[in-house]
Image (tube, rainbow, N blue to C red):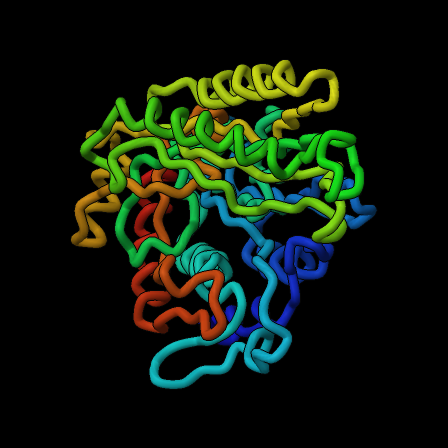
Length: 371
């Protein structure tokens, strides 16, 4: 099985999260069956009516234990003017295209590694998931299904072959402020939802300051971060804004209650609503509440990947499917070829040398944990 042609064939399939990932599962399933894996799909229709699915591939006994390699099949959107997004162009020792690094490079390396490893005593699972980029939804379905219980797991992400043993959580809400529209020349007849957001902002910053009081030096930044990434409101400059919506996200440290910021925000919104004289209503709609994930530094899978890669394990501030893998009972670590700093960008790429090294390490992991 040739690594670069396989990766190029995966990149050629547009698996943006808004589209169905079943066509890329077709390619992966065909390759896995050719390597002796038994396969099954878990499919559903998402809230937008799009067909989605997870692909579970197993070689070896149908039993708990062994090793699982976990990789997501969906990608973030790409600029339509990027003509190499689905081409998988190869030059200067790199493969270019959406998903080349995040994370189809890992998927290709996992299959190539499986082609080099023989059947073993313990099960080897390849878990290809949907909708990681929009909430790890596929991995959460696998966890809820409760049928896969690996002893060790490697979660594929572009880590530049550095083992990642822990990461922060990810939480997000949408806040909807409803006011009363009116002519802007007569502000007393209405209540501006946008102005209300302005009054709420002091509380939002105070919540951030409260969260910063706890620190973990193993992370950078060493505290819980927050961000208001989207604000929408109003109809025209001379109309009192009847509605304002914004998203608020925070990334809690390990050990922190991921719902703590949510409770503080809900309390602030209740105070805002009470101050509106009956003209304001505020709704806080949770979108995600994912806790942080931690695997001990002395765990076998962490030490193995450190020894094989020559890189010390570390932490990252962004989320992955590691919490779901740990929930399955696995000792997990995030690891893969490619640089996260080139992911989600026009010109995304992965070095062929890193792909090859990843395939070698993953094959050795199969020998080590499935023997």
